[in-house]
Length: 97
Image 1 (cartoon, rainbow, N blue to C red):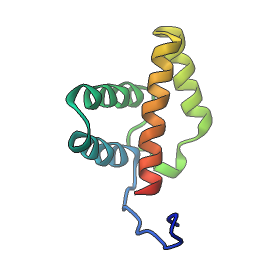
Image 2 (image 1 turned 135 degrees about the vertical axis):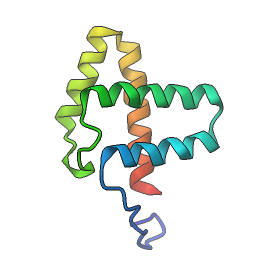
Image 3 (image 1 turned 60 degrees about the vertical axis):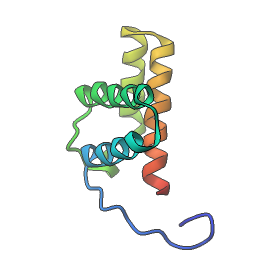
């Protein structure tokens, strides 16, 4: 449901890679190249840990949290938080477009 009370049409996204691809295509048009590359890199790392062909509704908060904790340990808290920011932006985009 949109903020104006009208129902939105479903995007037809079936798996995570479809969602990410649609989101990144949208980002390419809306953001500068540096921002797009940051978001693209986030999803590239994410899909090394999470099956990109998983159904969107099968993604759990626990799986995302495990990914972010691993990024904090391997890279830094700052890097993990940037990934969190980009993943959340993509998730929100998918929920509200």
